[in-house]
Length: 65
Image 1 (cartoon, rainbow, N blue to C red):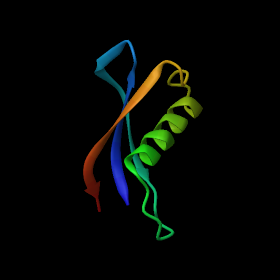
Image 2: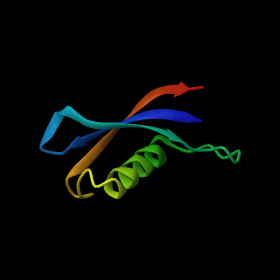
Image 3: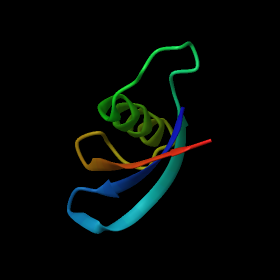
């Protein structure tokens, strides 16, 4: 299952910093929206978009096929 996740800086919540398409659940599991958020934040930190303390994420509800 794939979902779009937007990354924001906490102090600038109205401006998208980066967008990820996160794919989880390929093993038959049913990941929650929180799982997608955590994975996108992990990727953003790895990509040096900011620190975990300064970033937030919004998971889009629609599923991408």
